[in-house]
Image (cartoon, rainbow, N blue to C red; front, side, top):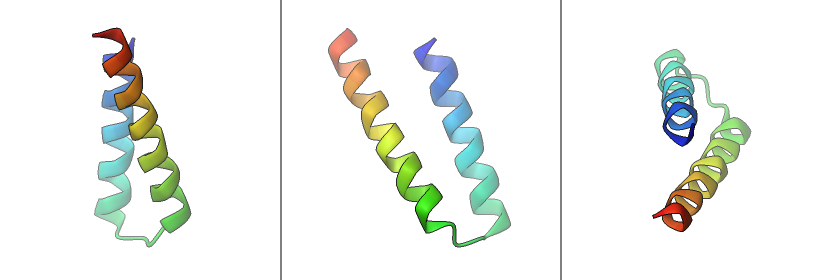
Length: 45
């Protein structure tokens, strides 16, 4: 489950970067999401 979520996040990040749109709010949200995900993974292991 965690792996799937991470892959989706990476896909989203890649598409945003390819478009080159300065979506700072979105990028900040995603960075927060990634940090939460990393913390969750650390808890699991």
